[in-house]
Length: 154
Image (cartoon, rainbow, N blue to C red; front, side):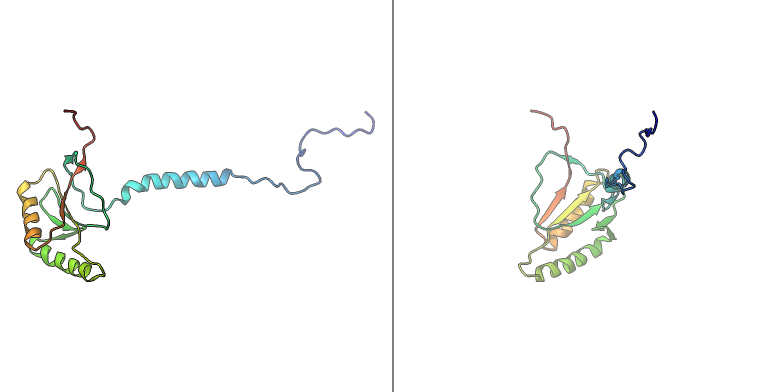
């Protein structure tokens, strides 16, 4: 082989030192997988509110137009308006202050109030909270329960 050029096959796709036009997507895939894992871990932590072990119910969920106010009673019997602890005496004045702002808005009406009660507390505590809310004139009040996973067939 006189005068012949022997090639080892290296550099075959790069003729004349031109830059490579292919995009290396491996770093982008690595970043996307890390973001996916971060969001999967962080999503359950984003639930806000007072931790309450709700009872189960097979009732259908109600349609919601606006975000409701949430009153929670935890297993120790403490009452929370949204995530802030309040006493029974302070509950109604705070609700009236919030509802006054909601009713003053155009087309305003009473806010929807959800009452969440831990299954470990006395039923009377939840009824006392509901009685206070009702006596204050709030009529859009609902009890919250977890949806039952297995409903027994009749």
